[in-house]
Length: 85
Image (cartoon, rainbow, N blue to C red; front, side):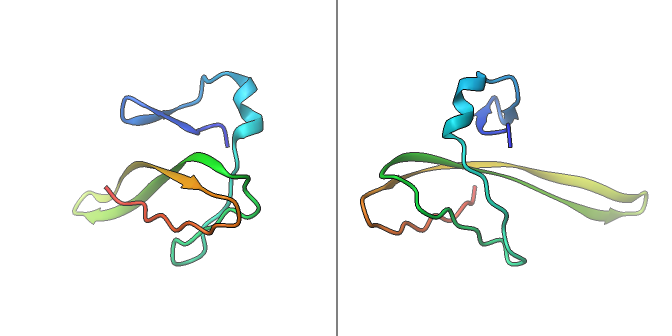
């Protein structure tokens, strides 16, 4: 995933390649839950792109957006973050 930094309301893909070693990715389950295991202590940004389609009389229209939250993980700690606007 190279879409890790939010800029101007959307994710940017022209970021410095040296950031790649700091990016962790995962996939959500069917209920939208996901987790990152074995993270070292520190400050993190969690980003998610949410997209869906809704029905109109002209067919399905795409909608959605990006959400980014910050979290601080301490040694041996489990942190739960809810991504909402």
